[in-house]
Image 1: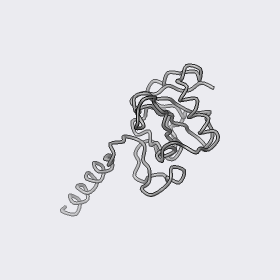
Image 2: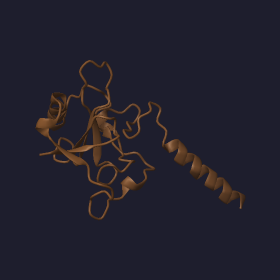
Image 3: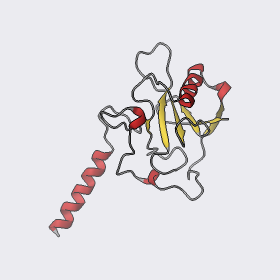
Image 4: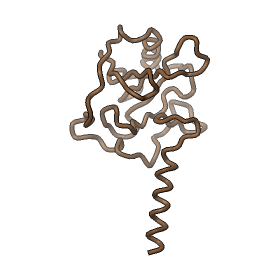
Length: 156
């Protein structure tokens, strides 16, 4: 009985601590000391580890935006993704866990996040592009201007 209770406490504590991140990031999880291109998939992920049967999320699909409708800085970021960098920030290219399930579900390691520069800001700002699939591919990318709060699928 005590052993089961202790195990339950450990599991609950690890679930709580697993959701914490030292810089307040909700989804991007760089490996300390690793470059963005070397960031491995993180263990202990939840629902995004298993693909949905249809490959589409259970909620409403994200809205769509054309490349022409994106800010110019997003086009620059897409170009950097296709060419493999170099990226302006060390965090670019890190694993995006999709823990809020706002994007279609795929196996862990499918999505990676990249910064879209915001003119006038010295830091990374809130704009990102998240792309799925092999690196340097931009066929399954999403744009967010509210730090992963919502997404728009980037139409080819």
